[in-house]
Length: 440
Ligand SMILES: Cc1cc2nc3c(=O)[nH]c(=O)nc-3n(C[C@H](O)[C@H](O)[C@H](O)COP(=O)(O)OP(=O)(O)OC[C@H]3O[C@@H](n4cnc5c(N)ncnc54)[C@H](O)[C@@H]3O)c2cc1C
Image 1 (tube, rainbow, N blue to C red):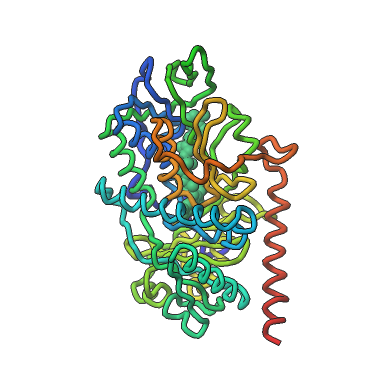
Image 2: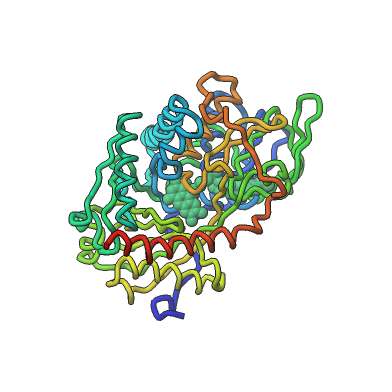
């Protein structure tokens, strides 16, 4: 084990300030709506439903927020980089692509407005995000993308040349990058606890340690079987994202759960922070197995996330070593900085790389945020609630997308190690050969 990971704790750093607490409650006999899953999606939906006078029970098999919603990187943005504007246009046509982009911005705006309206104290920092180019040609394609974003939805992104990148990041690893001014950072666990409090204030019941095992509809009423007993409901919303279990085979066939991990370093000095993160922004990169990193909201520690190693051991020690190696490659001066915390969580990818919301067999759902769910889950939970209330405003351009699985896939992503190993290899090849070709 590398000396820098000699003593770490397997525990989400965020939980030091806001650990999801058990939510004991008594299961009511009947409610208007049962929401399955107590993360951002479920709580945001519950808030909207309760505000419209519906009786709501949010049921979570762990505690509310135990899933990705209290463990993520806390980076808030419209996440355009997941699907390029050109790819959207090629697949859906220009008009629809514009609507997708607009709604992506709307998801972020909705989340920011909610935080303000509910006065959620979640260390919101509107600092922007710097997405670094791993290869010189990536900067060129990001510039083209920025051009399109400004043309289609009037969104400004600023390119930063390599010669100027030190004003954004104290690293020589990159070839410049793109600055997304509207993006923000927050404390994900504090945000979760603020959203939970808001849903409760509005009248929603939130209950932990209650796994939903199955549901059946009889004469318009859902009979929901849980580990805490039975409950009847007029409507049901599935909000289980990367934790969707075998009780929901139709959804499992359409979601690919992927584990991500984050490390938090020991506190570093202010001088170090000033050098490495002069603007205290959120950070990402263009590689396939990308790293995301940021200062902690109090500006004392550095957090870096990515996928656990594919081919080496899967223990926390291996993962911490792997992620620390990535951190030290970006910032060599952190080679001896200790990792103090490591934790993992699940994201859910879809086969078309976009989130999905709608109804299947009468079950409402909102899920599949492909690793960018802080804003999207809050927004699509709200949208799903509006749809359940029969409101026109619940409609979304994302509703119209077919939600497809993959032939033969039943929910266990046996192919993932091979796919991720392929991405890692492609990243290596790009770095070895494409960067040297460009240099000639
Ligand atoms: C390490 C990591 C870093 C990330 N970083 C970012 C980031 O920086 N920016 C960003 O935008 N997104 C990020 N994400 C993604 C984001 O966190 C998620 O998209 C978002 O939290 C999803 O919220 P959710 O409510 O849909 O699901 P979750 O928060 O995962 O909640 C699902 C809940 O369903 C419950 N559940 C499952 N099955 C059942 C059942 N049968 N009965 C009852 N309950 C059940 C689970 O216990 C869980 O609490 C990250 C995710 C991870 C894991």
